[in-house]
Each structure stands twice: as structure tokens, then as C-alpha cells.
Length: 342
Image (cartoon, rainbow, N blue to C red; front, top):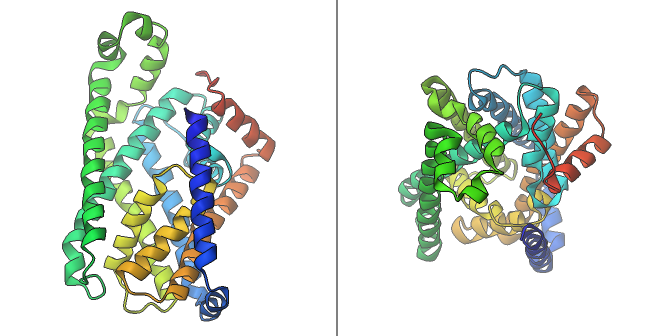
């Protein structure tokens, strides 16, 4: 099933990239790039890198108070993981950074680290829904978004309700596992399924320690806010780089929400194709930006979100004395699902 999703994601990205390239007036797109403000591009890239720092900080709280880990190792493995998402299919970067952290921090098992990544996704999903609600409230009050776009707003509301249902289910499952531990989950599963998974469930439940700590939860909420403010600022600074002066922070919020839903779909490494289409259609259909400028913006924003992360991953490899061979072997191990706890 995983292989099918990888190929479907690659197909979706190829189709989206083809549509984007076919509809682009490349001469006009090049002219739009001529007016790009490099200062704001640098600020946008800095905001993307700040989101990495905030994620590494948040990981400390998600790992729980009993696991003392180095900030450098958390930051390095986070950078390596996001680099992995940009170059490996199937979003192997997420389990890859768990694998790397388990090697650099022997006190953290792969499964426990993976449990914290699940919690991270839950916090990010909750933040996305908060931002969506905020945008839906503020958009009608802001010039450029009060037009007649009932279909898009209805679609956003539908996605919001679907993701809210997913969030409720995920939170319920994690709370049950965190409160009752592996034994509680094993009671819900058939014996022939639960028995071979006993060690895995115990390690995963142990990784949910932060759900039983109020300070850890508060720290996770605070740093989640910092992550998403950084992402929003990267979108906003890129709008300023293209002199889209009529667009402000609310418009950046809306773009961020649309991109969050877009990149949740299966797709090629680095979100190529889907990211460009979603950015362009939001700017042209919702904010009334000219097509060529919106297409140039979509290319620049994608590069700003991908290139700094790849560069940060390369620097992290160098700092930790690792090589791309280590990353490839780690991704192969994760991809084959043969990773075992330390």
C-alpha cells in the first residue's frame, strides 16, 4: 500500500508540475523575477530556518522531562529529516530523523522518538485548524479576500471539518495509549496481534510521556505557535519581496492554510508541482494577483521553503560527522521497516 501511495504521489506531482509549466508565460514570469527584492527573500529564508529551530526546541518538550537530549542533536536531526523529505519519496524524512536521533542519543529509542513525531503532527494539525478558523473570521474584513469565492471558502470549511474529525480521533487514541499504556491497548487488540507488538507498544507508549506532564504540554503549545508564526512570516516576507503591498498578514495566513492542506496529499519529494499550483491558484483566484507574478511567487516561495532546508541538512551532516551514505542507509533501513529499538 505504501508503494502505491508513493507512485500516486509522484504522478500527482508530475501532473501538477506539467499543468503549471504549460500554463506559464515564462517571459512574463522572468520579468516578474526582475523586480524581486533580495532583502525580503533573505528574511523569508531566515523565517524558514527559524521554524527548524522552533521544531527542535519543541522536540525537547515532546520527548518529555525524563529524556535529556542535546539541542544540537535535536536541531541536526530535524534538519536532516526535513532535508530527507525534500529528496526521498514517501516522506521518509520523518522516521529518518527519529532513526538519526536514536543513534546520536542512545537514551532515546527509535519507537519512542516516532511517538513524539506523531504528537508533533497532532499539534501541527491543531495549529492548522486554529489558523483556518482565524482566517475564515478575518478574511471577509480584509481587502482582497472579501470577493465572491464561495466555492473556495466552502472547500476550506469542508477540509476543516474533516481534519477536525481526524484530530479528535488522533487525540483520543494518543490519550488512551498515554493514560493506560501498552496494556490498555493490548486489551483492545486480539491476542495474536497484541502479543508480537507488545514491546513496540510499550516503547511507543513510553514516548508519549509528555502527554502526562502539564509543563511539557504548555511548552509544546508555545513552541508550536513559534513554528507556525515562522512559517507565516516566510510567506509574508515573500509577498513583500514581490511588492504585493496590498497583501498582509491575513493573506499570508490564508496562503499558509491552503498550502498545509495541499502538502498533506501524497506527492513527490519536496512537494514539487502541488506546492506551485496551490500557491498560484490562491494568489490569482483568491487575492487577484496577476498570473505571471503569482507563478513567479509560487516558484520563489517553493525554493525558499526547500533550498534552505536542504542546505541546513547538509550543514547538520557535516557538524555531526555524517555523510549522505549514512542518510541513504538510514532511509533504506526505515523504508524496509527493519528498524529496532536501541
